[in-house]
Amino acid sequence: MARQRRLTGEGFRTPRATYIPRMAKRAADLLTITPEGLYCPAGDFHVDPTRPVARALITHGHSDHARAGHGRVMATAETLGIMSVRYGADFAGATQVAELGEVVRVGDVAVTFVPAGHVLGSAQIAIEQGRCRLVVSGDYKRARDPTCRPFEPIRCDVFITEATFGLPVFRHPDTRAETDKLIASASLFPERAHIVGAYALGKAQRVMALLREAGYDRPIYLHGATERLTEFYKAQGVPLGETPRVVAAERSKLAGAIVICPPSAIQDLWARKFPDPVTAFASGWMRVRARARQKGVELPLVISDHCDWDDLCRSVVETGAEEVWVTHGQEDALVHWCLSRGIRAKPLHMLGYGDEEGDGRMDEAPAEAAAA
Ligand SMILES: [Zn+2]
Ligand SMILES: [Zn+2]
Image 1 (cartoon, rainbow, N blue to C red):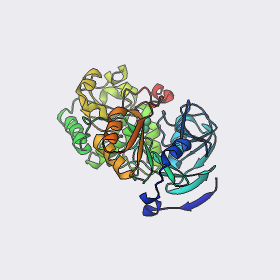
Image 2 (spheres, rainbow, N blue to C red):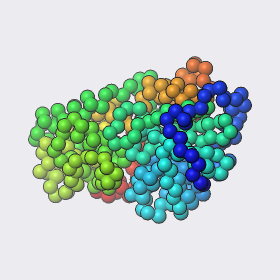
Image 3 (cartoon, rainbow, N blue to C red):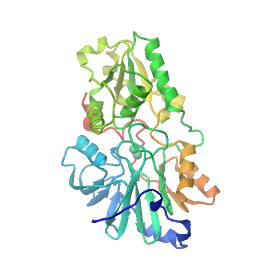
Image 4 (tube, rainbow, N blue to C red):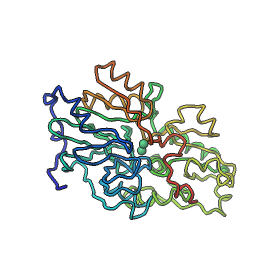
């Protein structure tokens, strides 16, 4: 796998004139579906495999995409770092850093990692052979996130997308309004602690960064399960301010504080030891009131690390793809939308990808969930 050439900006885009009619068949040969997940025979690698494989290219560190036990792993330096934090330094037989925007030959294909805007280190993976380019987007979003690089649309023949929030009812609000709600509640109820459920990788750090942007300068307290990845973000240069770990014996003294914990902890006995806790949850699913009620969430914060409906559709258009494959989520609505626009589309019904904004079972690494 030697370095080839570095492409930047416009240089990476292919004019649509290069499209060839047999593209659909070529694309289906270039990337197939196996029990382990998406597989590229010409490059002999899987993308985000859900079971151990010989060679894996990994889009980002969420545990449904980045698993331990592969022979070789290629990912961005941040994603490799996150995997190391989660699984230990020996999470794979060998690792290779993918530099963003750099074209690398893997077997008989050219591969490029391009920012996805989802969490720190997240990348889309472009796979190209001849004149056929596929892009596996992994998870991605278009909303601004101070903790990671923004999504860059890539011109391609086939765009492979998730559809976690792929229904027209999902429109994520401006994050500033959500953060302001939390800060306002904390100042309105200084005698109560605010316990904010947020996934340990990405969402927790984004909420902290958004609070800092909104001018909140008090310490933000962390549940133990959120601490290591937060330290990793800080070490990568993401400023998050003062973030002490909650000392169990001192929970009763944290009136007025904002505390970040894994979603599973907001209903735990752990959370009840704080003074009259206000339970909050930062997730795109908080748009659904019934879901918030069912989880006993008093202060729902609609903050998502996935695209809403408009951004999914916009992204499909911006890639210029002739064909769209939808991996998981609300596949049917997006497939239908593509077909209505004259874009070929199909659902892949891929198993093993949880939505990390769902109920937390997929995205919380067991070791972290257990550590408190
Ligand atoms: Zn993810
Ligand atoms: Zn995912």
